[in-house]
Image 1 (cartoon, rainbow, N blue to C red):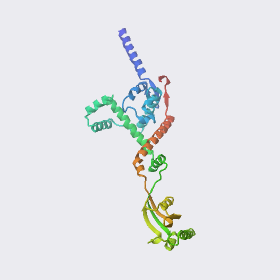
Image 2: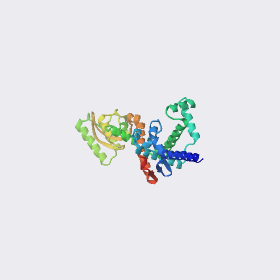
Image 3: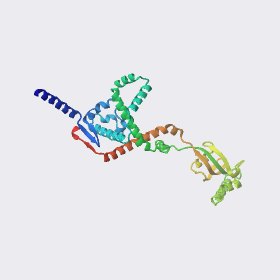
Image 4: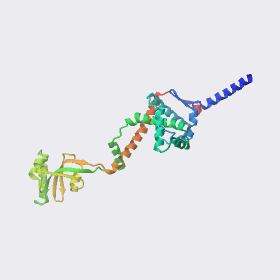
Length: 320
């Protein structure tokens, strides 16, 4: 009898000692703990598709965790910080929600649940193991969307700034000008006379007379309209000398004297419509997605730094 009791105690002690070794605490994060067994399983996790939430790598690659116990422990601590926030915000998924997601995945893959289970076995998961992975993935991504991504403000202007940086010589073209002009023909007394008339007209405008009043008095445009209004022209349809000058004008402003092939022009810009480079339109969403990712990583790093300041984190160095 004594021998039997001794044997039972020996077995129990052996089991307890073994359990303590396997489940020794590697770190504590507030009320959460990282077990040594979790740390030991990291190398195996790295070999399984989808078992590592790459957002938690903070811009590093999964390879950066291989053989690096400290990096692995830091990663597990970040997991605990996020998961504790998910619990605090009541964002945990129910088993029914996870099962529904699994069913949808099988349906999208045109597989029965048995076929899906077999497929996941080929990826190194039992169905229950993959349910845990899927649950954690969806909870964390929903958390990131709510707490970080939804607060990012990336505009078309931000994307356009990146586009211009990549193509510094690009200038947005003007799609359409609406202009008025006062024209002085060289056929009427020659170039010098036309220039003098243009100078006299500009002097009146600079002296306070309205462009429209002067245009109605002295404009020499054949078939000219009231107030010198010419109408609207698409980019490339007007004289290059004048179009180049218009590019530097704001709506309502008046040019200096411009030399054209047939005389001199004083131009007023009535309206203009800028068109966005079609090349930018093609890559706009791609640039915005890249900016969101960059800003997400930066904001997530800041989030972890702030959470670490508030958290009670203890690492047991002897486990490393």
